[in-house]
Amino acid sequence: MSDNNNPDFKKTIGIVAIYFVLLILAIPWYWPKDSDLVILGLPAWVFVAILISLFASIFTAFILLRYPWKTEIDEQFSNI
Image (tube, rainbow, N blue to C red; front, side, top):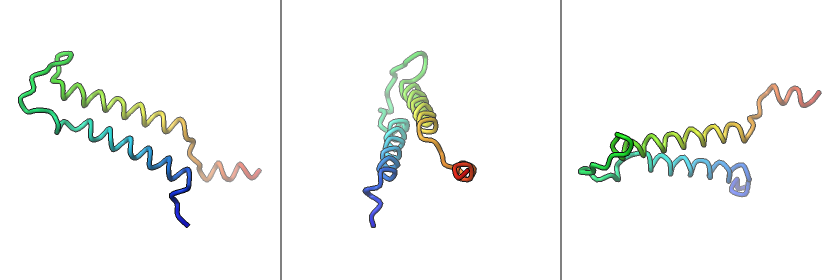
């Protein structure tokens, strides 16, 4: 049986895809070497990398708070 129809599998693929996009955007490989754009006193690529890092942190917090983790203790007390 294929796991592709499992809702948890699709959710996991979506989460991994979002992290992958954030990683690609955070790495400044696409910035021109001679870029002198400055935002808030920082080179633009540094500002964008920090901003993407902040988005990744917020997304991680959202995922951890939105989807509860099942633990052995939860399973033990659910049978009571």
